Image (cartoon, rainbow, N blue to C red; front, side):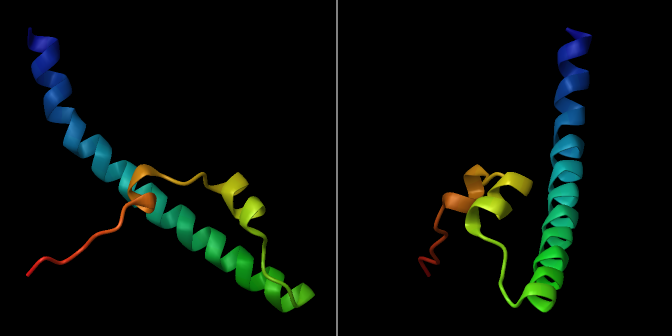
Length: 67
């Protein structure tokens, strides 16, 4: 039972770390894409980007403001 409590406490921290790492990875990919554009005159293809960072569930969702 104590293990379950520990996992629940770690879960939000783990998710936050994953989100931070994902933000860093996105910035790395953007920088690489800018460098590719500058060097070749072409941006990276969708396939190349997906190889570096597969899409996540939240990437496919549309958030709507219902106010």
